[in-house]
Amino acid sequence: MKKTVAIDGPAGAGKSTIAKLVAEKLGYIYIDTGAMYRAVAWKVLDTGAGTTDEAIIRTAEKLHVSLRFVGDNVRVFADDTDVTEKIRTPEVTALVSQVAQLGPVREKMVELQRGMAKDGGVVMDGRDIGTVIIPDAELKLFLTASPEVRAKRRFLELEEKGTPQPYEDVLADIIKRDKADSEREIAPLKPADDSIVFVNDEYDLEQTICYVLGLIDAVEHFYGREN
Ligand code: CDP
Image (cartoon, rainbow, N blue to C red):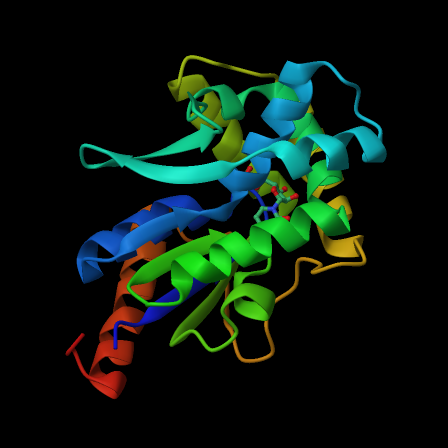
């Protein structure tokens, strides 16, 4: 049986970079669950039907979100529209936590994500992967750092992508989303009881990667390398 790896944590903690690398090392598929919530938020803005909870739920009910391979790359689709790049705008980022706290939206995503994880061979990152989606994952990691350090990383990332934003705005978004994600009623952001929490303020990406790859080796040793 192929294993599953769950990586949770707040924005800017390095989840997606680590998850991609771990997936590559194990030959598993990387699943970015945040992208799925972002696809719903994108559709809400695209339809222009408003951002009340009722309007969001109606839009989400009709929408089919999927992750599809295009060549070697996993792309995000909202119905048949490829939204992989469109879901990274500040407008989508500002709306996504409101979308993600709605019960009917989460129910739909939970079902889809559990379906994707059921045969193993996946590394999933998000907010509720170790607590709700795959609580029996062989490795559960919770990556975090202070809001200031995470905002600095996000700020540099956005600058590098050619979509710069003022540091103060990035920090404000991170603080706002941290609060919304950890205080919501359904599936709040928190480490699973049996997760390994790694606070990486003092570690750069390379050191975090070394730490996590060490854990992967330990998991392979413990459960066997055989898929
Ligand atoms: O990449 P970033 O850390 O900015 O966030 P993301 O992983 O793209 O997730 C965007 C938002 O989706 C989060 O702030 C959460 O509100 C929500 N989310 C969630 O509720 N549950 C997940 N499993 C993944 C994301």
